[in-house]
Structures are given as C-alpha cells and as structure tokens.
Length: 368
Ligand SMILES: Cc1cc2nc3c(=O)[nH]c(=O)nc-3n(C[C@H](O)[C@H](O)[C@H](O)COP(=O)(O)OP(=O)(O)OC[C@H]3O[C@@H](n4cnc5c(N)ncnc54)[C@H](O)[C@@H]3O)c2cc1C
Image 1 (cartoon, protein in one colour):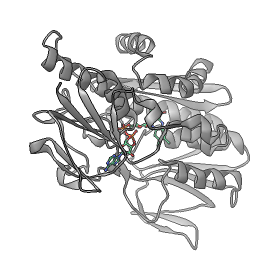
Image 2 (cartoon, rainbow, N blue to C red; image 1 turned 180 degrees about the vertical axis):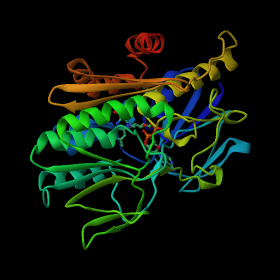
Image 3 (cartoon, protein in one colour; image 1 turned 90 degrees about the vertical axis):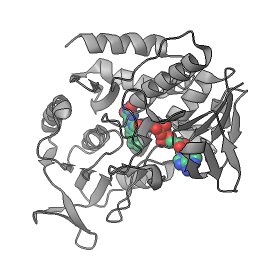
C-alpha cells in the first residue's frame, strides 16, 4: 500500500485522511488533542455556543485505520516527502500533504481569534466590555475568512444596540472579486448603524491612550479592540513572498507527490473552510487517480463559500471562484444555514454532506 503522510489534522487534513482511509497507509501528524470548529468561535465569542459545541477529540474524528502521531512537525523536506517531528522522529511517504493552516502574524500585540484560548479572551471582553466603543476589523494582507470581522461587528451591534461599533477595512477599494461581498456587508452594516472605515492601514496601537493610528495619521478611539492580523505558514523556508506556500492553483501541487491544501497555500481565494474542503477533495481524487488509474483528474477552480450571521435571524451568503463572485441575502435562510452547519461540520470531515454541498455549489456557479 502507498504511504501518505499528512501534516496537520485540522479541517483539510482530517477530511483528506478520512477520504483516503483504507486506500493508502495514512499517518496524520497533529499536536492538538482537540479539533476546533473555527467558524463556531464567532458564536462562542458572542456567548451563543459553549465550548463543547465547537470542539471534538482529534482521534475521534479520524477513521480507525489512520495513524495519528500526536506531535508537531518541525521540518518538512519536500524533496524526500519527509517530515521531522519535535521528538526527532522521521516520517516519509509516497505522498506528502501539508495542511498546517495559517498562524497570525505577531503585530502590535494584537490578539487574534483563531484558537479556543483566544476566543475565550474575546468572549470575556465582549461579555464585560470596557466601554461602549468597539473597533473590529483586520490589517492588510491575507486573513482567515475575510467575512469574519464583518460578522463579529454585526453580532456585537446586535448584542449591544447602543454601542458605537466601527469596522476597519484596510483597503479603500476591495479587489474585484470581493466587491459584491463588500457592497452587501456595507449595506447591512449601515442598516445596523455600524460605522464602516475603509482604507485605514494601522501603523500603531496606543494601548494607554486607547487609540489606533493609521499610516496617514488618522486616529480612532477604542474601548474594546478586536483586529485580526494576516496569516503566514510556520514553514517559512517553504513560503513565497505572501508568507504562504506556493502551489499550482488548480492541482494544489507544490512538488511532485507533495500537495498543500487549505489556509497554508497561496491560492488566490479566501481562506475558508469551504475552500479547504473542496481543495482536499481535488487532491484526494487526484492521488486516487494516480494510484488506481480508473478516475479522471480534477482541477480546483477557486471555489469558496461563507455564510454569515447578519442580524437577528438574518444571514448572508458569499460564494466565489477564481473568476466570479456573488453575495446573497440578507435572508433568514442563510441564518439557519450557518446555524445548522455547526452540527453538519463534523459530518463534513468524512465527506458525508457532499450530497448537499456539491449540488449547491453547482447551482451557485451557474446562476448569476
Ligand atoms: C473566527 C473564524 C471564523 C471563520 N468563519 C468561517 C466561515 O464562516 N466559513 C468558512 O468556510 N470558513 C471560516 N473560517 C475559516 C476556516 O476555519 C479555515 O479556513 C479552515 O479551518 C482552514 O482549514 P485548514 O485545514 O487549512 O487549517 P486548520 O483547520 O487551521 O488546521 C490546521 C491544523 O494544522 C495543525 N498544525 C499547525 N502547525 C503544525 C505543525 N507544525 N505540525 C503538525 N500540525 C500542525 C494545527 O494544529 C491545525 O489542527 C473561519 C475561521 C475563523 C478563525
């Protein structure tokens, strides 16, 4: 049996292992005991879900034949399809897949919201705000789920209607593919009374005076600050200038037999669970195609999707691929879609909800 080594047992790594279980000899290297459903961190931070709803033991999500190595990879040698872990063990595969996600850049001592511990700090801040002035947003660069800061601002305003909520958008004009999302979210923000500040690139955060300062000298006061920073891969020796690992954007190949899926790669598509999911399916299919020879190869076309809470019982849906995008809603349907996915996520890690996801994507891509 061919050997597959997967580095990272998050959204993409777990799905890939489960899709190929029984067909290859699979090893997953993942240091964490628990897998977190990251989109659910938003519900968690707002006090709408508890910890148990968004976490599951790592081992319980992997099919029985998969070997889980509870350790951290410290070196990846793509030429040899080899990984070295922190305890100096070496794992070599016929195939190597890097699915290590992204890590927040350390900037201005800002706290991110990608882990459960970070989510707990922000939950505490939102439950016990230090004043009525909230500033939410991101710094320039590739962040996890660009819709998340908007969603957080919508939910804070919903929780504290009297609060002064500002959302910082670092660019003046979003890239073409993000225009439908930007226009819809700006409309929702305005209907909720949220102040949208575009083109604000932070050059300093003054925690004493509670000010963020832009490169152009503009200042914004905050009592409560939640700003996301761009992500990079920890494997900097493999990264390009973007800080992420370069791949062929259709096959997700880094080198022969080495693939990078999910947030860790430099595909020009938003870093979302949906893109991680669809990239994983492409790589799983193409590995099987090579081994079994009875399947045709597939290409990833940049598909990504994100449902967000937009207000009381109201939600929005953003869909895109490498060529086009659309933003739908607000509507009650997308609100419940987002709520329901918290429970469906765990099944999605086995590929079990593709029966719903695939026709939905096909419908969205055809109807403009
Ligand atoms: C607050 C928030 C809201 C979001 N909302 C949405 C949403 O509404 N819709 C959506 O589609 N997406 C959303 N996302 C994005 C989505 O969660 C990510 O895009 C998705 O989890 C990426 O999957 P991944 O497998 O690439 O990375 P991850 O799921 O982050 O997994 C990476 C794994 O690699 C492991 N790892 C890291 N370094 C090493 C190492 N050195 N050795 C071994 N293992 C390692 C980590 O422990 C982790 O388990 C959101 C994210 C956040 C934070």
